[in-house]
Length: 210
Image 1 (tube, rainbow, N blue to C red):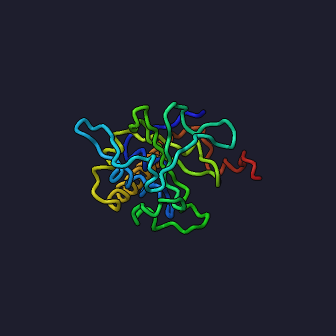
Image 2 (image 1 turned 30 degrees about the horizontal axis):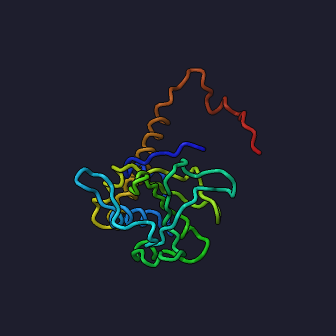
Image 3 (image 1 turned 90 degrees about the vertical axis):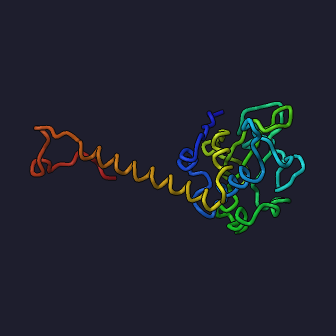
């Protein structure tokens, strides 16, 4: 099974492109989970306001089997995984409107994102993952990420979903601009060789155009 990348902060989340672009709902789902489903005690340990076994908000048991074979999306563990985010499932109507408002009931990406939690033997959250469907039945290994507690805590402390979305999108824009400037510097700094052909000399291109 491929290694699952850990997203440690909002910059990592933005770079992963999880929940983007619209009409995907993964970022809104993640904000709801971090803000309204869990809380942090005095030791900054995660606890849940609800029990996923009860099925609120569409939570249901995740079997951790993909491709209808013995393959696994997540590491094997003796305690259960629970999945949420299917906007067409029973209980999903309990999610806030900002999570469900883009759902079109069509195959257009508006219901592709999921959040999966792993519980330990004491029934406490030990792992949190985000993923997306690669087809109607299976999830994508390459687009599955584990979330750090520090990232969840960072999201938990943002006041509103709109503010969270703005931070994610603005972080992505800043990174894109930085990469663009880096490419420009690399292009400008190419050293010129005395033997480099001039425009007149370079009349034959070695490339093959198919």
